[in-house]
Length: 343
Image 1 (cartoon, rainbow, N blue to C red):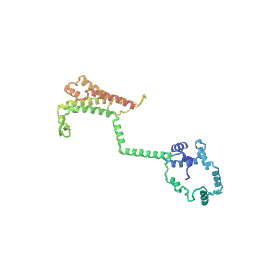
Image 2: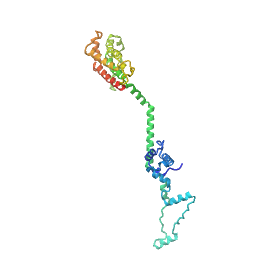
Image 3: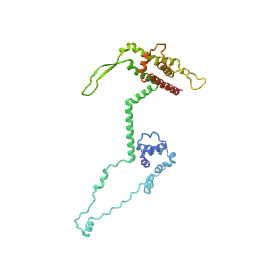
């Protein structure tokens, strides 16, 4: 493989990349500058007939047609080589030096003592620059920085993929991006408020207080599960379970608006099978209406619900029964938004 043209060697790597895109060179993205120069040189020489008219490549093809670079001496040598004649070496001019006697005579005639020393420059002082390592050119330094930066980015990306954090994050995002998850979050908030009221917490023996460390006593807290065997637990719990979960699910099952959903606005479009057996919009609307009639208007379903249980649930919920209304309102908005996206 011949050395690339000196015109390509003088170009910087960004200019070579731009030139590679212009002339249609393939698979050049990961090449170093020296490999890119060789690849461009071979590609341009192979496609000289098609690319020689490009103004940007005029200097390159001029160097190919005229390797001597315009020098008369080099042209004569190139012609001689092409014709087969060896160029005649030019005689070297002899260096004229004065004899030692003439120098001594000159020194004596000038009135200087004959034993005077003539200062000479030591030969070793001229060759000190050969042992010095010159710094790389700016283009080579930029190529090295780009290569190191790419290696660092690749190692960081591989390390991040090995941790699996991105996969877990995507799974969590997919799980939370649904109407069912929002409904479960609203029910969890209500259950968290009821837990401390209808299911008391027992404090067991724990770590006593320490005056030296200044720490208070630490108790082990567990729910009193024996309360679940008394009517004081099942009365309020059945009230909340019926009004916040069971009755809304019954309404959502029978008033399922997704059963009549159709594709777009086509007149004779076929009905789309419902994605769920329960309509989330009907569920949240019925839940809000039931909570309003029971906790605000005093409706007791013919004596099935007691005022004591209703008052206990109203005190236990965060913010009262308004917590149920707020959760239902958020569910209605999310249901409408999800229906619009699936339209």
